[in-house]
Image (cartoon, rainbow, N blue to C red; front, side, top):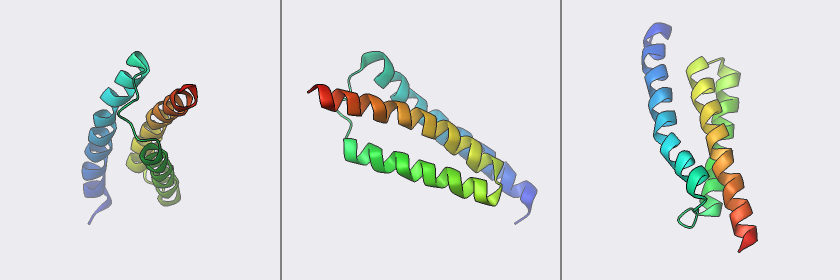
Length: 89
């Protein structure tokens, strides 16, 4: 597979998976209702996204780095809100 073709797949994939995550982060931030979010699942998800970011950095793959960097930031916000919410209960 050529590098150009990989980029044609990588950028839309990164964009779509990142954009798909925005509504959850937005809703969590604005409502502060995280009752339907599992703390262990979100912790594992955030760790997994961080690993994908490191993988992208190791490969030098801009689509992987961009998509997972933005998703990591959004997931981290939701995770922190969930931790704060869990401690308040």
